[in-house]
Image 1 (cartoon, rainbow, N blue to C red):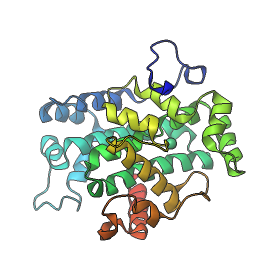
Image 2 (image 1 turned 135 degrees about the horizontal axis):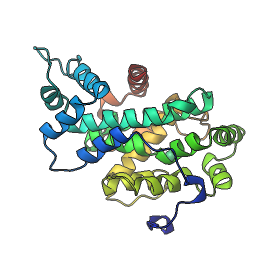
Image 3 (image 1 turned 90 degrees about the vertical axis):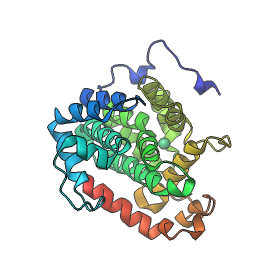
Image 4 (image 1 turned 60 degrees about the vertical axis):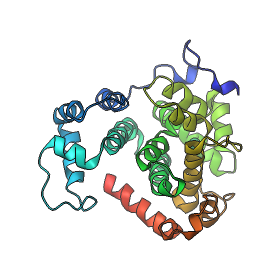
Length: 278
Ligand SMILES: [Fe+2]
């Protein structure tokens, strides 16, 4: 597994001078990655960031939590929403801001939509996989961070890569021939510089592997979510080689018995959640 080594040296040429992620959002992610972080610290940070504050309050008061009383304070809202979800919101915002400048290109907007669809799919199937939905969402959202970096830095070239893939080429192979690395390798380099749990880094690197070790449950979940998103109509390039969503869902032990894992319902929910983000 040559890709496993962390290179401390200089960046691969394609990743030199990447545009930076939103420093505010990344500081929040780092803060939330500390297991001993206290709600007060997080609340103070959020209170100083009006956009986050508004979003967290809005969510705490949404039908999702169905509270009797209105939530008006940030600390209260953070408790209602939960730290894992606050982190997910921060990351979604950080990545959304990062890709925003290139979203006018339709092919690249499809990449962002695919990223979100995979993240939401991961969250939705997490309970059936015995996994935490918040961690699953984060892992899903970050799985293609290497692709997001490449398309932000090289919008023209990446649009061309998608065009080539539309004609039947494998997108990762095209990435390798254009940039000397694919989005998993690019992602590995990027996440090795962030404050993230090992299993999330692993899912960035290995979510397209055919063979996944038995105890890498999160990686397997992310791989399933990634294929599911493609199969449910959120693929970057229309997928012709993928099995139907129902078949992918059956890879999850016991999934057949769960009404929540109906493909049509999943697709509708993913659609609704993406629309709510815009
Ligand atoms: Fe990927």
